[in-house]
Length: 167
Image (cartoon, one colour):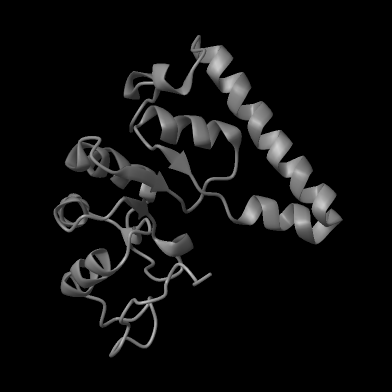
């Protein structure tokens, strides 16, 4: 059995985080594989529209933890315009700064299909290993479920931006 990436021509591209990455490469990649393609680091509605136009399956609204740019916008602030730009055509995931189940609830209400978390589970891993990760995920799930109950929604699809106050 061949690996999923067999047959993809990556010549001229040192890695998939290269500054030389272009939409032409994404088009070539789309033509070379049936795998899902998700682009991370989308920070504008314009780039979100380019993701749709270039046939990607999803995007991640991400500032990579805010480590690259001190004056950049928070992903939660960018999320609504990205969701509006893709109009449900592709999956929208958001990350960077999500620490609580209530943070996840806000992002889901604002239109994210999923929320990626990094540091919380790493804190659990560092403190208690696998049981720590499991506990962190349990806490996030419980906080999310409590937020849903407090908003009076039974499913994630019932969340709307009306549940989030923007300042």
